Image 1 (cartoon, rainbow, N blue to C red):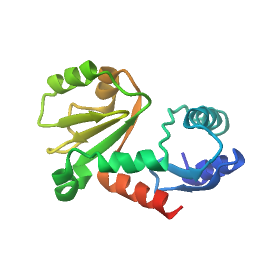
Image 2: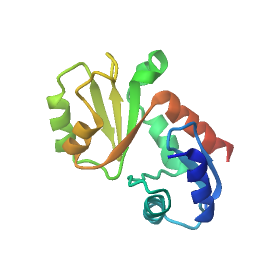
Image 3: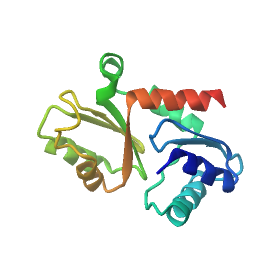
Length: 163
């Protein structure tokens, strides 16, 4: 979806100073009186109704985003190869057994660690040919999610910090 359309939609919903990052589908905004769950529902519905795109919306507060960065279990990879380190924001936290089963099913050298509603994923041999796809992950953990590489995660944190 065009990011200008997403920003415009956010403004019509009353979200404060909506900003997007590149063509990533990430939206940073202020909404001091709304809960993340109500915002997810409102944005998801408005995107479907107005833009004709059916998608899941995952919201994280500024503080939660800071925690995503602080809890990164793959610090060396974040420095050495940030484009192959991803954070997958999930709609809900997976069960520990589901994450264990996902890790046991990995066929390549990929690494997965969970922390709350986030999965940290390392793809040392690249993402494009990996069998550890978003669909495989979502099925294993029982929750939809959206992944961003570490470079994008850091840029989003910068947008949040500027507010």
